Image 1 (spheres, rainbow, N blue to C red):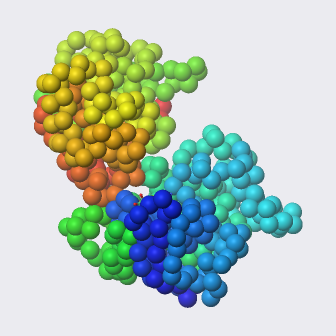
Image 2 (cartoon, helix red, strand yellow):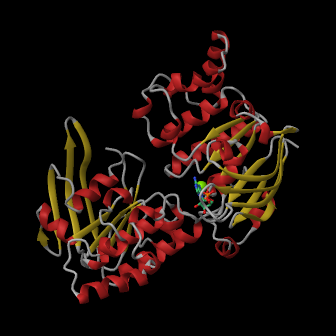
Image 3 (spheres, helix red, strand yellow):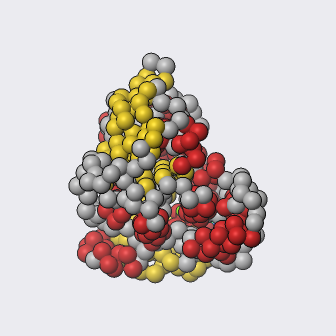
Length: 464
Ligand SMILES: Nc1ncnc2c1ncn2[C@@H]1O[C@H](COP(=O)(O)OP(=O)(O)O)[C@@H](O)[C@H]1O
Ligand SMILES: [Mg+2]
């Protein structure tokens, strides 16, 4: 056995409940292990036990035993664990030290005093193997999220650790970039690397998975072989709160509608300096329907939606709402835009205040706000500081604020990236009920499953 966890429990310092309870897991050389389960079930904590960050970086109380290649890993220094295990995190920015791709990839080798020739040959070997030759010497900050994640994988692999641990590496990637990440992992698996990955998005890992570990509340609720996991019905996967291994892609239906359009974007052009971001884009949306806007990172999805919501200025083109050509201020009064990072949009000291922001606190308004919180399953948090909520909860607070204003157009930027199956399906239901109440709903998304469940139309954008 390469890894043997026996009866591991872990409690973060300052918390009462154990985040991991009696976890036992053995991993063979070359196995591909998928860790799944609802947010908060302990996946990240388990990866931190494996790479030693718990308890060496995240303080806490640990019990049980952890053998790594036959040796007691609980006594090892981080460096020693690091010689066995490479790490890739959800947000690659958090792990980069250098500013250029090559420097970042060779960094781990420099730290280990590899001779120059060996560094050169490894860099060559891995840039060919992982197909990233085109990225070398680029500025890390200028790479797309998918490219950054590729560099993170390469950097974790050049020292040839036997084990690669990844924590939700696809959370910020579009579908195509996730497929490319899957390809890299396939190559590494074929090289004999043992891979342990925590993920919500399963489709790009379907064929790679040898074992699926289902976690619940800090415990292992089930371990399934790849065959068993792939054979689970969609109902069973939903019951377990998971996304699907094989989501059906919905046919792309461009924004044509049979009923009278409510929101019309006509011939929108957006230029920034010499760059054309949007090149004559036309889209119409009707009340009561949900439109998914898809397309690769950089296709202009967010720019188009911010123009619709009055948050950005178009170079030319018209935004027509309910038959009237609206200026930006009017658009802002009719549309509500929930950004990708809800932290930037939360201002008030409590959840209830956030929903009532810029509103008179009349008994009537307060009652309405409380009803919305109830409806969005947020009543228990009404006195909490919005910053203390989880990402999904923050998004729901913003939705409550949007509903409070009774805005007729609701636009959400990537509302479900990084959400587990259960929360993704809850978001879909919520969006449907908002559309049913008569709003026009636009979602920018690369979440195939969300699109399947709730989009009435799919509008695909391409880079100009
Ligand atoms: N640094 C931390 N300090 C205290 N509690 C934490 C920390 N990180 C995670 N937790 C808690 O541990 C539990 C498991 O979380 P986590 O391992 O992040 O789950 P997952 O990755 O499956 O979403 C949660 O209750 C979470 O709030
Ligand atoms: Mg996690």
